[in-house]
Image 1 (spheres, rainbow, N blue to C red):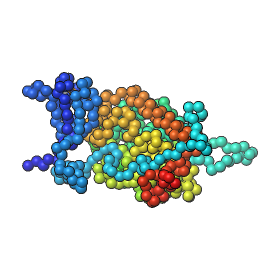
Image 2: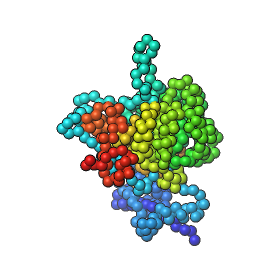
Image 3: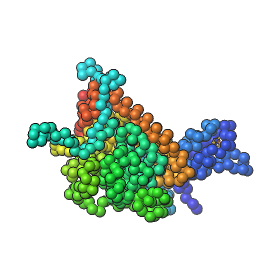
Image 4: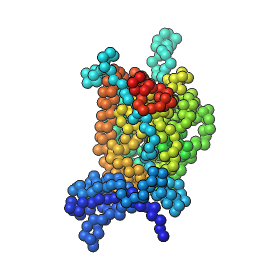
Length: 501
Ligand code: SF4
Ligand code: SF4
C-alpha cells in the first residue's frame, strides 16, 4: 500500500460561477495542477502538485481561484507537525537528503522586529529630508587611519581601493543557473541605474553582462566555477565566498538539468552534469591561507579592486571576522541564518547558523574593541526585509546591506520555496525557456529600481527623524536603538538598552 506522503498541502478552490474555462491557469502552471476534463466539461485540479506559487490566482481573468492550506491534513499535533510527517514519509521512500529553497521559515526570533528606532523631539531637532541634504552615499572598504602627508607636507588624498554606493543597499549573490538570465539582467540593469552593485554568485559572469562590470561584484567560491582573468578584470570587486547563511558549512549544489547551454559555458563546466562545489576551499585552512588568496586576487587585478570575504553567521563569527579583518580583505560580508538560497538541505537551512542581528552586533563590537573596525567595510545579509531593517542594521554597525529575497519578491517571487525544482512559474528560479521569458528584464529592472529608491527615501525619513543627516553618522550608533521584550543577554550582545531606559 502506498503511504500518503504527498497529502496535498494546499487546496485549489475554484469558483465555477466565475470560471469561464479559458484555461489560462492550465497554461501558466508549470507544475501541471490545472487541467480541463472533457467529460466533466470543466476545469479540475491535481492538488498534490500545487506549491502555492499564486501564479494562477494572479492571472485568472475572472478571479475564480483561491489557494488555501489544505484543511484535510493530518490530525493537529504540536510536536509532530504535518511537514515532519511528510518529510519522514519521503525519506522512508527515497533514503535521500531533503532539499528546500529560500530562507529558514521556522519560528525563531526575528530580532529586527524586537528593536525600535529613536526619533528626535525637542532637543537635537529632527531634520526635514525634503528640505535639507541627506547623505546616503556609502564608502565601502578599508578607511585611511587618519590624515597622512607626503614628504613635502601635502595631504595624501589616495584612498584604499573601495566601492562607492549611492545608497547602502546591494543585491545579494545569486548565481546564473540558480536564477534565470532575465533575473540576472534585471539586477545588472537596476544596479547600474541606481549606482549600486549586484553579485554574480558562484556561477560566473555571462558574456552579455560584461558591460555592467562597473556595477558587478564577481564571486570566487570553492568550486572556482567561471573564474578566469577576464572575469576578475570585468568586475568592480571580487568576493571570496567562504560560507552562505542558508547553508553554513556546506558547499553549493546545482542539479544537472539546470546546467544547460550558456550556464555550462559561463561556469566552464560540462553540460548536464550535476555540480557540487566543495564545502571548504581546498586551499584555505587558516587565516594565513585566506590572506594568500586575498593577495593573489589583488595581485591578479593589479591592486585595483577591493576584495570581499563572505561568511555565514555562525557561533564564533566575531573571532572569525577579526581574523578576516587582518587578512588584507577590504570588506567582510556576513550572511545570517534566514538568508535565501536556490537549494539547500532542509535540515541545514532550518537548524544551522545564527541570526544576523546578533552576529552583526558581535562582530562590530569585537572589531571596535580590537581597534580594527576601520580596516574593513561590513556588509550584512540574511533576510533584510525593509528599509527599517537596513536602518537598524546600520545602527548595529553595518556599512551596507545585501538584499536577495526582497529583490526576488520585487521581481514577482511569491516565496513558494520550490526554487530547487526549477519550475518557477514567475520566470526567476528556472532555466526553462518558456518560463524564463515570463520575466521581462526591463520591467523587472524598473521594479527593482523603484523598490530600492523607495527604501532609500524611507531611510532618509528615518535618519531625519533621528536628527542624523548621513549614513556615516548612523553607522554603529546603537544609542538610536531600543529593545522590546528582549532578555538581558540579548540586549548585552546587541549592545542596546531596553525601551524605557
Ligand atoms: S484561469 Fe480562472 S477562469 Fe480561466 S480556467 Fe482557470 S480558473 Fe477558470
Ligand atoms: S523564485 Fe520562484 S520558485 Fe523560488 S520561491 Fe520565488 S516564486 Fe517560488
